[in-house]
Amino acid sequence: MLQLAGALRYFHGMGVAHMDLKPENCMREPEGRLRLVDYGSAQAFDAADGLACAWVEDNGGTEAYLAPERLDGGSLLEYTATDELGRVLGPPADVYALGVILYELLSGEPPFDFDYGEDGELVGVRVRVRVWVRVRVLP
Image (cartoon, rainbow, N blue to C red):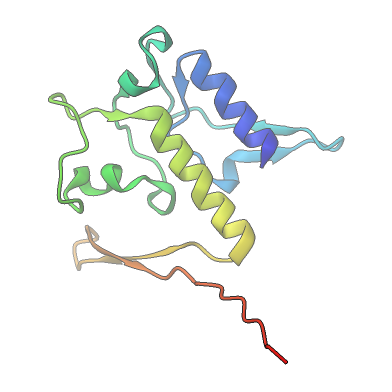
């Protein structure tokens, strides 16, 4: 995870948002070094403006790892998370995907189930987050 987070920090610092971060795009070399691959959805932004102004085009990605504002054009949220051009903040979307990957590593399953209509369109998302509780038995 540290290598993946470091790679994201590097690319975001260079003005590139991956926009399709998922386990299938994280390859490990035989000597153990991680490689981030598949930049087909990557978008450039002006890193000099800061990450809070890193608006990029939303060119898709894998739904299980998309930030909520990217799902269905943000209509699943009660607020608009895009700018007037329909763009999203790229680096925060990548960091969200990193969190989903971490959750999967710890729990063995993704945090959400997706519901699709008969036409194949996304109609809803169910949270299936597990909560771990540590219980201490007192003598």
